[in-house]
Image (tube, rainbow over all chains, first blue to last red):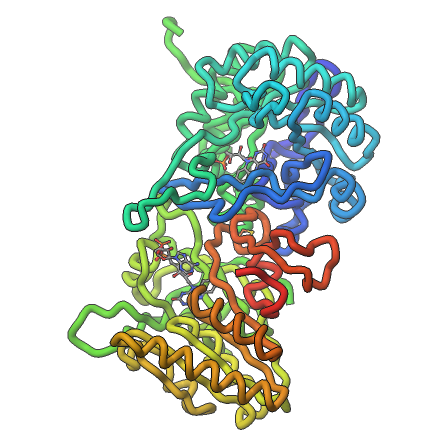
Length: 311
Length: 268
Ligand SMILES: Cc1cc2nc3c(=O)[nH]c(=O)nc-3n(C[C@H](O)[C@H](O)[C@H](O)COP(=O)(O)OP(=O)(O)OC[C@H]3O[C@@H](n4cnc5c(N)ncnc54)[C@H](O)[C@@H]3O)c2cc1C
Ligand SMILES: Cc1cc2nc3c(=O)[nH]c(=O)nc-3n(C[C@H](O)[C@H](O)[C@H](O)COP(=O)(O)O)c2cc1C
Ligand code: FES
């Protein structure tokens, strides 16, 4: 079965071998997983969030397990864009599979500088813009919670990286995710990935302290799958650029559910912690799952959710 | 040897400790994974199928012992994950990835003191088993539960275990005093100290090691989600003594840079 596809963008297309990608922050730089599977068997991988300068991240504890999920407040610890380009990228099989850089910044200008730096990197197939971060110049309001700020970032990245496919990653922590989706589409996004983590919290009754040093953190894993599915469905109906589904995906069936509601591809995040070969296993299992479900053409299957007339 | 991920079968789960009360200590015997070589102090991530979807993370456990036919881990029931592991039966399936991290150094001719606190005894079972000259090794073991709860017999075969049980006020002070004495002896012999156990215990050993200038390795038990360096959940801070300049006084992953560290290279 041919699983290859193309995310058809407004400016740049992103061809993928198959619809299985790995989600940012859950797959390291990819190299960490090379002993557990063949990286080139993946549709692509989204690298850990990169910032212009190295960042040390938040204090520990930064992760806590919850029922069917986990919270994290890692705080984007990373070695900065120079280290990514010089030390990580050369280790990745970017000629054989799509390596997507996930970018994170505290201002529109910084986003632009980061995008410009990555624009010339042959090994980077696309930029995924993480707007779930505070805009320092706007008093720490999150880019991803304000359609205008999200649009400003998208437009700036689009201009700064004219050679790259631009994927914007939306946060579910908003009242109406379609408002953001439409705005980023208007200003030139090539595709949208959703969702990032949901803001959550856990406490310890014995110590009477929050479980995370940062008090609150992002919820991910199977617990958020219904929210992610709903967001993908809403966004896919609201825009005409392709949507990549993320949130609680573990199995080939989970992935197919996302494709059914309108995603063109998916990302496996917390699933990589259930077993380090989760994404490889999912990609390998996909043809058999399609066969079981009578899916002959994956492209035609995407968005084929049967709804009654009221929708 | 490159780590891998595989499914292993439970051969048996043997409770330790006095009979009567519900056991909270178990030796878990699994079929042998494909990898050949490992070092004591390295660990595996275990995720039994019965974790279902509700317990997402695998749990890290030291490799206690390996034979040509099986691998043994030893655990204490702490919370929901180990509770569910206590329900494992012959034939159940466990996802295992490893061997992970960096183990303890082994210098056959150096006088070596092993310091274990509670479950920190686990990596030393393999250590004394694989040590070519066990007469150069001594061991001090501090524990809270009855001695029969711990795999001391398999250590005693190679190295006599000197154990101290913490039951009453004053026992802890006595243990700390004994640690100090033993470490001083080793320092005089230009020997090596290897320690594994709860964080407060590691801090005590670290402080003595600094004071006495004795070479010392510590094994840390941070919370882990992936075990492979990807989630950045398990980090600890390095000191100015960290060998890689760009990583000094920075967070590093315990699962890949550790769990065993030189005592002067990390902050606890
Ligand atoms: C490298 C490494 C090797 C280990 N080797 C062994 C071993 O050989 N045998 C063994 O019994 N245990 C070992 N541990 C500790 C073991 O992983 C934890 O006891 C286990 O994860 C607890 O899971 P749980 O679901 O039962 O507890 P949870 O519900 O997750 O937590 C229950 C309690 O245990 C504490 N806890 C959680 N995770 C850890 C942890 N990683 N270390 C210490 N305390 C923790 C929590 O703070 C809480 O108080 C090791 C840990 C590491 C990092
Ligand atoms: C430990 C951890 C780190 C993450 N880091 C990033 C990041 O750097 N950038 C980003 O856009 N998303 C990050 N995410 C969010 C994931 O990419 C993903 O959107 C989210 O976890 C939902 O998918 P999942 O349920 O499959 O994990 C992180 C998630 C986790 C669990
Ligand atoms: S446990 Fe994930 S980085 Fe160490």
